[in-house]
Image 1 (cartoon, protein in one colour):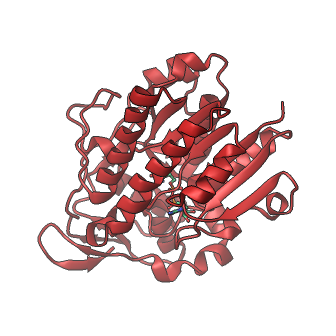
Image 2 (cartoon, helix red, strand yellow):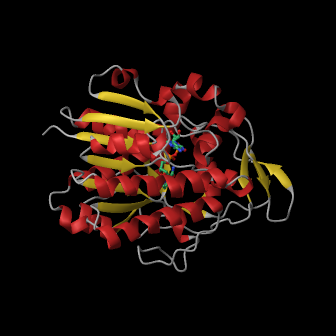
Length: 343
Ligand SMILES: NC(=O)c1ccc[n+]([C@@H]2O[C@H](COP(=O)([O-])OP(=O)(O)OC[C@H]3O[C@@H](n4cnc5c(N)ncnc54)[C@H](O)[C@@H]3O)[C@@H](O)[C@H]2O)c1
């Protein structure tokens, strides 16, 4: 079946992996990408064979601009909205853009969705960050929303904004809440690529606090598969207006991720520097996975060690890609104790 798919933010990490995944799988589909190419977007994230294809159109533009959003939404059957400002640490010292893009950008998309009745499915990519730190052992979709950084606050605003449009306009939307993604083409400011590229260069890995914060790490291809299921599951009524966690149900400490990366790259285990904890740190993120299994028939396939190996291999093979981003790798953090440090 021929369909037109609109992906916002697909010059970024998850979006570019999703574009490649869907492009390779659905040879009849036409793809529209809307991306403002911020510091986090990179045209090199879109493989050349896709860029050159007649099935692909790149639209340079902003998700807060209703003119371009309306025009692209009018042409689409399936939409995945990923465009966002995404770095927690940056949101702590400069947050206006987070609210403009993440909240107003989502509002612009939803206003267009109301008008574009040919759209069959709209997948909103929220985030596990909306939950804050886990009340108990795991976070179900019913966990209270206690966002702990401006980024998380903006994502929570966007998430509830989509919910409000279900209630008032019955739009065909689904909210996915992915947990911590890692994999190829993730910006160096994020923890996993920062650790990997530091280890490759035999430089210190900088850990916040004592490194005991735990995250549910999901390999990006598994996340793409979950989004694909949300786009294609037979009975859309089963998932329409649902919030679904996309995680593994397991969590690993930041320190253990650092140690695992050092071991895989054959570096000394003490190549770790500790800095103060950042304000708004989340202690524990671990997803419940039952709803994704039931509604999407989806479970993650990749164990963390295997995912890290694949990611390390990609960064080892693509030094040209990440060398250009090195100057933005370290972000200044005003720690909870008030000291200014670089991560
Ligand atoms: N990476 C994760 O671990 C993770 C986890 C859960 C949810 N998410 C969510 O997934 C989505 C994608 O995350 P990512 O890690 O790929 O982000 P990213 O920062 O790598 O990419 C974001 C993309 O959005 C584009 N963009 C930013 N502002 C824009 C605007 N105003 N208009 C149009 N495009 C704009 C950027 O140019 C970039 O290409 C985000 O919504 C994020 O909140 C990410």
